[in-house]
Image (cartoon, rainbow, N blue to C red; front, side):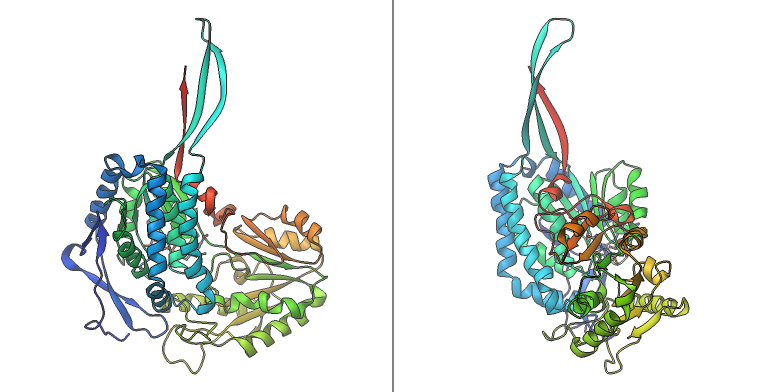
Amino acid sequence: MTTTAEKVKTYQNYVDGEWAAASGGKTYGVLNPATEDVIGLAPDSARDDMSRAIAAARQAFDEGPWPQMSLRDRSRIIRQIADGMNQRKDDIRQLLVSEAAAEYATHPVNLENPIQYMYDYADLTVKYPFEEMVQPDVVDMGMGPRLINQMVYRAPVGVCGLIPTWNFPLFVTIQKVGPALAAGCTMVIKPSPYAPLINLLLAEIVQQTDLPAGVFNVVCGEGVDIGSELVDSPLVDKISFTGSVATGKKIMEAGARTLKRIHLELGGKSPNIILDDMDVNAVAPGAASPAFFHAGQGCVMTTRVLVPSEKHDNLVQSMVGFVSQFVKIGDPADPQVLLGPLIREERRLKVEEYIASGKEQGAELATGGGRPKDLAKGYFLEPTIFANVKNDMRIAQEEIFGPVVSVIPYKDEEEAIRIANDTRYGLGASILTTDVAKAHRMAKRLRAGTVTINGGGPPRFVPFGGFKESGIGREGGKYGLDEYTEIMAIQWG
Ligand code: NAD
């Protein structure tokens, strides 16, 4: 690790509208995964730093103007944040590249979508049905009939602890912050230790707006204590976490002690079902994409490619041809680079363990599997494709979160559906065919939160979330906003 600490900026937490160093002034170095250089010193906070932020968010919710502010004003302030993001787009882009190793090919999702979504949430604030009249009722409790008027009011859920991840850091943060603000909640963000700086840049943007102090707070640190403090605190009403299944389960368990609303966006092992009417050469680049797109570090990537047995070899050949010819590996600061590094060395070692297990369990390594020879620095791995994988192998069952794809042959469509559903995950699935009617029938038999037929896009107006161990709850548009409200009934005579 190159320490250029004397040249890099020291960042602070954002609490109650002000910048504050971590208690004891502790910091830690945030790395650029491509160069291994320290790009900034983030505050390394302790439980008491988190407690102060929670108290500020609690006070802003219980006594501040935000939850009661008119929807027009709330919308206006959310729009100010979106405008601020738009104005600082170049700074955001730079940080996404250096902190999250975000290749230019990911920028539509990493950069453009979050800005667009923030505008969407500003619009949604004034369109969302916070108040709905319900059919009146006539009741007789023994004193004669009475007409009861009734309505449903969606109140803000309260103080939210937001724990986003690092792979699409701004996207994930905005999918939490946008609906939380729209609903009138206050919040404390606990960024991933790998990508705190983008969240602090968002705090700089927020500080320039009319958002009341205490509504939006960011507390960073390397350890898990501050996350635990957020989950344990009785002052926090809801946790929204994006990360691994293992951490999600711990959060759910700890959150149960205070009966918090727990929203979990977790991992996936999504199938890509190629039906026998498809030209395998045409679908090969897309099928291979988890072996290079953002180094396979995406929750909903289709890392299990299911192909009719008779087309298996041709597909694998075409996928290998594509990655060896077209995938440029290197520092994502180069716009031509398609495959950047993994986020950290410990994550690369974990992916290498999976590659070894694939070989040991008898999968055929069709390409990749090693470290690129010409890159001395950075946590790079080659695009890796395993062929003739069996669905009970570890590389087919466990989320690898690296540039590794498994190609699994199947006999017939019934078997394809069985294999697709034979996983503890249920985040996404893809079907490729010219027979769209058949694909719709298949889609409804898949146990996954999102099914795309011949390709899809980021979840702008549709809900996003998982079945089974891929999570609980939905993000995105109106469905995301639902999750930040408590449903109240109000009746009057
Ligand atoms: P992770 O589980 O390692 O999460 C780490 C985060 O959780 C850190 O911020 C850490 O401080 C915090 N943490 C750890 N223990 C905690 C505890 N006991 N209480 C509170 N906080 C605690 O996951 P990661 O590496 O950040 O993210 C990668 C995972 O995220 C992958 O599994 C990926 O599929 C998933 N993901 C899901 C989505 C989605 O929308 N479903 C999107 C992106 C990524």
